[in-house]
Image (cartoon, rainbow, N blue to C red; front, top):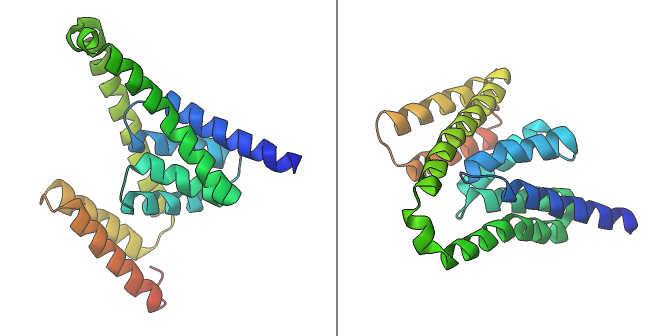
Length: 185
């Protein structure tokens, strides 16, 4: 039982730390979760993290919370999912509560505005890194269907302004059909 408690504590503290020191939302948190749970703790395989990310993106709600739920459930069952949710929502809740108390002062402060602008550049870099890493994982798999779906999704979203929800539904349908016919790529 002690080993289980240690895993629960490590899971909670890991999601709390990731959430507390990350700006920019879910797409920034995903590479940090990957680094922690795949690289450092080795609780999840790389491909499984990619799959959990895809599910987290497809599910309704914030991707960061969805990913925390999935990682928590995968590593420690229902208690792990609950602890991961708590760890991932507690820091933003506290930060937003504190900021709301001082909203007027923060709103017009030029230093806060400058810091937020600087963080935006960092967020962009982390998102680009996440995209490249996930795309590279798909390309390394050398399967035609996932590569074609990735490229088609990018073209549809970036250049043809197709709604991302429509792309997700279509990709899910293609994946379902491919898996039910036995085709893996």
